[in-house]
Image 1 (spheres, rainbow, N blue to C red):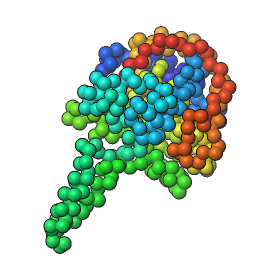
Image 2 (image 1 turned 30 degrees about the vertical axis):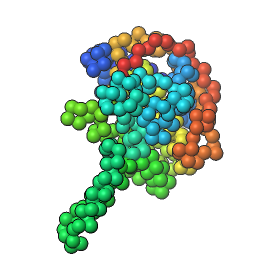
Image 3 (image 1 turned 135 degrees about the horizontal axis):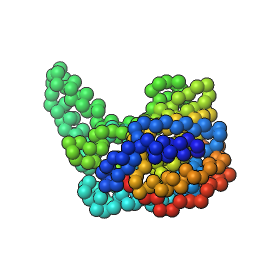
Image 4 (image 1 turned 30 degrees about the horizontal axis):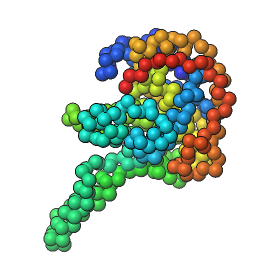
Length: 322
């Protein structure tokens, strides 16, 4: 994980101090790229111990791929690091029940473009349009417009399953330049100054699958990354996603190319970052996934085995600012 240490050093050397909405100044840079060849090992940080996060890395990824955005589904695997952002107070401000995080990662990956309306609204829309069509002459030009709107209802209600689309395209047209996913829908973040979510998607801003021969490379762009806390997690999650995609499409996992648009180290994290920089990276571990799984949604936490992980000791107390 030399690449990660180079990122830490680059921010500490070249980053500019910026105020943040979290109230803690940060050293920030704009635009940084890292590449991880999975043939060299699984890119799990070795300059501090992340064994305690291994379950959370697997669990959060599977939670996202399930389409869930509710804490109760993370709690099924005893994963609680999202709890602080799904409190009763925070959710109430957004008009949601406690634990409902709103249209974040899972919704965007599995139901992109779907629009939230009060319960029963889509049934009412169908009924209203059916009534209009029944009472318009067949040759009335307005009928075509109503039929067109009616045809949009399933998409507005359910959205597009980007994961299914990506897997299918990788099987049928692996070299297509359209093989991508995004978790960023501006209408689900903030409109006219009104926030739709408390934590907008930071990673998965763009996921592009590139195939050369039988090798699959995943390019991951994220709009913002807390480098000491979040980035190691993100690297590992998308490396796992790359391995899963490769397995279910008959390809070989090659590289994870990771772009960070705004990479930051908060002032409260600087000493922790310097501690990591004093440590020599150790050999990367390996991850073995259950070869029997052929459905991208068929994986469970127990299907991923981490082998040969020998990191430096953990660095407790690194503040997280989201």
